[in-house]
Image 1 (cartoon, rainbow, N blue to C red):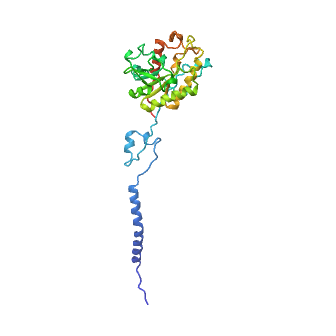
Image 2: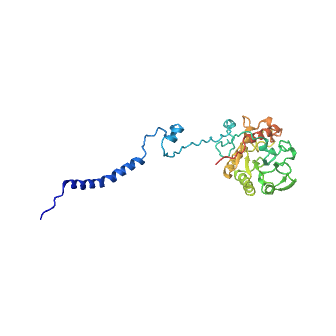
Length: 312
């Protein structure tokens, strides 16, 4: 049997067709990749932020979004007013103020009489005299002093005591007056009447009982505790009440402010002299009650150590 001889040109043509079928798809794929792929180059230090604005937006047809982190700067918390610290250091019988307490109101800008006008005081006689001395904007028409009809009250009797409602001059329980006239800002300035016979447990129990009830009756009221004022040796009962006892009581009040989420005013600090006594020139002759100058300084302290809402 004879085979027909295939001519060489025909064989070459077949080989060429096979090679083309393999090479052309690869070549097309490479060309397509080269056309669509974007050339890359090292970014300058700092990324696009290091380029001029125009270059950052025109260098490439496709840009990659970058996120610039802006540091959040927060101002440091206000520092406590330690102006009286040296008095406590020089008089170890006094209980020093806990200047690290978060309840202690730090210095603020002077909030003026507009701030004082927002305040109601539940108080005993040393603070009561702000009203007859007409230290408030409304003078004797002011409704800002809440205390007994005789111008004072005792912490120990707060649960049953009737104060004089300044709006109609009727005597009512403290809690009823709060419900009728919810205060904007309420300063509790109590304690001198009782510090001589109330121990810490008794004192704090009565104080917290009053405050917790007020918080429930008027939850929007801002409650501030105020330190008990110091006395001088001229006070007729000096000895049964001393500034050592008063500063210890103030430490109880500050601790309660922390516990109950209230603020504390260290007003005693502006009345103390270097011997740890009340300054004579700021007190009445009885040695117990601040005079007009003393009460004015206290109001100035309240204005410049104001309660300020802070961002959480």
